[in-house]
Length: 238
Image (tube, rainbow, N blue to C red; front, side, top):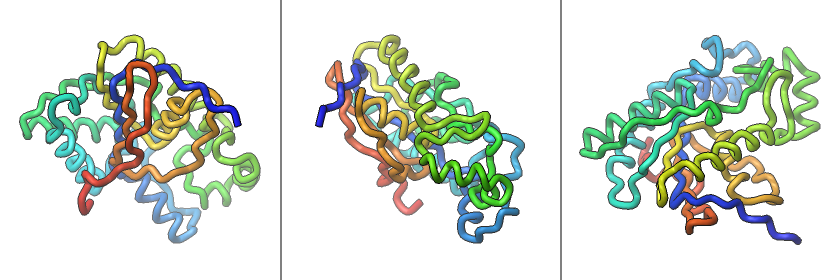
């Protein structure tokens, strides 16, 4: 089997934190438990879905983790998704870290770090999709989630394209030896794993990426190596 061609990236370290639990995460979990297609997310669009109370506590735990980092483990550049739940996660993390004596600075906001766009299916739970758009539910099952593109939305392969573009620009623009922290979404974490695995790497499947988890890649000046994926030890009992 031909080995993937490693993706060239000059960063010293890249850490991606998924946002804390959102109110939509809570709704989707309830819909999965009951199977009720009437269970719905109240927000008008995905971009303004906020953190749940538990999500705020997860973000505070991530802030304690950030504030306790020392030396080379501290990020030198931070970038964040423009979606509310990610911005709230970073804001909470930064506030907690500052109280612990760290100086996390401000985050750059980049549209390419947004969550996967679901088009006409935006914020619809799987049970609601099966009820309202059974043909789309069947097509998603047939095509597979990685390649399925909802009308007006993105496939995971589409997300990979924009994440690859972001990482290429980031690698060229970041200071030498930078440790970059991203606060984003599970789709971006998954896409990042695909990008940094290199050209020709198979899709990574659908590994669990918990809320407020940490995924980390370490670099040697040319290539990035996966060091941690979906880590939650910093959350303790959260």
